[in-house]
Image (cartoon, rainbow, N blue to C red):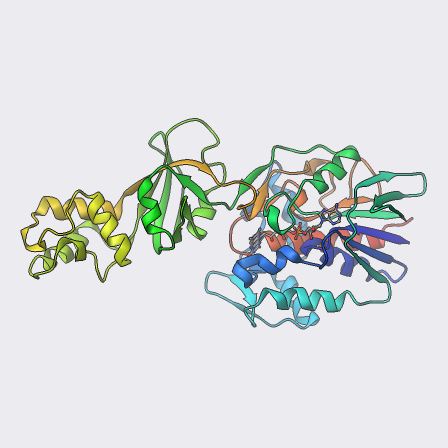
Length: 404
Ligand SMILES: Cc1cc2nc3c(=O)[nH]c(=O)nc-3n(C[C@H](O)[C@H](O)[C@H](O)COP(=O)(O)OP(=O)(O)OC[C@H]3O[C@@H](n4cnc5c(N)ncnc54)[C@H](O)[C@@H]3O)c2cc1C
């Protein structure tokens, strides 16, 4: 039995290894780029956050939120880690549940997968871009670069549109649509948010822990706590990724309210600032020792307090305004960044057209899909790669086991 897998990313490699466990299977892994796992190599800022110990159905989104349940229950974080351990990868987990390779290098993950793929019944074809695929009486005919290949089973693991510079594209959606499947609206998720606030330019590169709350027309929309990063255009970092889904999709006034010191009350902060009045320091140093210096000065100015004024001259109203800026700083939002900056695609191929127990198409027997191409996207922190491993493995095992 021949099994063709389109896409040598996270889910495609997991599918290939699982399919090859069936000894009768001849697996061919087709990757359009010159190496396997190009996007995988860039994940987690080059560290690859390969799973999260808490990854379970509740951390995933899409039109059919429970579609991911079976794959995650049968091959969840624990099984994934012992699978990787067998492949030779040592890992380490943070308190948050995020798991990284012990080497702290995403390369290690790609390497152990690459080594494992060196099996007599797996052939890897790099630089092979599948342009067309169709069902025939015998199975599937796949075409690319002037070559035609025939398979009994076909697994589409082409990934999503996010991270376009790393290989994200429309290919998987187009292939599956040409085989009769439907696709939902695609949006960037786990993405930076742009702001109209010009002050952000001066904060480029500054990181801060905070509680971030998104408001739409003054009403709470989403909230999270964690690390924020200022960029040239707006707001980034895990705390923003976590709450970026569907922000600015509807018309309205969108605002991000930031509390830069969530575990300290306004009163405590005001009394700390009051102590600064006893010093000969200028107001520009009011928040020194509390926040990043650049951020402290921007917030003090935003509170309407001149940076050169002597701290000793500030009254309680001035200090209250500075404390307000620290605890509830509002930044207007205009739109999310595009797909090229997003970590994952929200939306994708309609999951109701696939069986959640096998990842096989309900419309085209022998056709499978896995990973980001499907309408499943996960929270920030290792959830998306976990979905790639879980769904890829399930698709590969099912394709390898299916009776002819
Ligand atoms: C910058 C960045 C950082 C990220 N960090 C994390 C993280 O730390 N943790 C986490 O859980 N998730 C992270 N993600 C998300 C995660 O990388 C993806 O969700 C995951 O890689 C999806 O796996 P996949 O197999 O579906 O697709 P991919 O890994 O994208 O693989 C798809 C492969 O298919 C190939 N392909 C596409 N079309 C064709 C074709 N027609 N013919 C042949 N080959 C084709 C592509 O070249 C690609 O190699 C990150 C994403 C980005 C962009």
